[in-house]
Amino acid sequence: MKRLPDKIRAGFTLIELALIVVLLAILASIAIPRIGLGTMGKVQAETAARQFSDYLKLTRSLAITHASSNSNGYKAVLSGPFTSYSVINAATSEVVKGPIDIPEGVTCSGNSEFHFTPLGQLQGSGTLTLQFTKSGDTMVVSVTPIGRITVQ
Image 1 (spheres, one colour):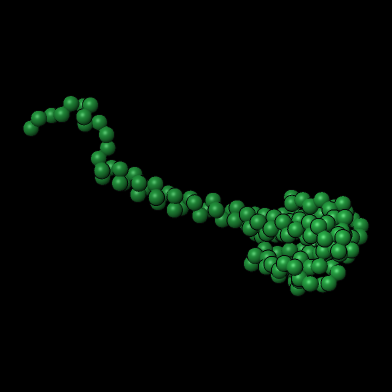
Image 2: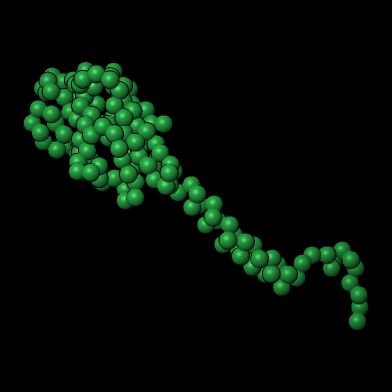
């Protein structure tokens, strides 16, 4: 039998490559779930907070856009024990959007009504906040009296 030169013999066999792929798959199946569980609560709380923030921006925009025909503005109102919220025309009490459910497992606390005037400002005085919490991770949506909406 003829011996092949070293240049041609360099490389891995199919069995060696298969074993490496199997070992990497086992390691990944152990490591990935552990990495994901730690951040899942924060991601869900942040997603819920950002979605609520977007609906607050819609509410403010509707109040400004319809200022000539609606002097009462629009409001975002949380219902029940903070499980959903709706965008409401303050003049007619008509539900414009909603109810929008807060994701299961995400708890909320804070103000239950965010009322925007036709100038886009909050009705009343002071900053309003709503906290979204899951697995110990909290995101806060705050609205200043002039109508600035932030997520922290």
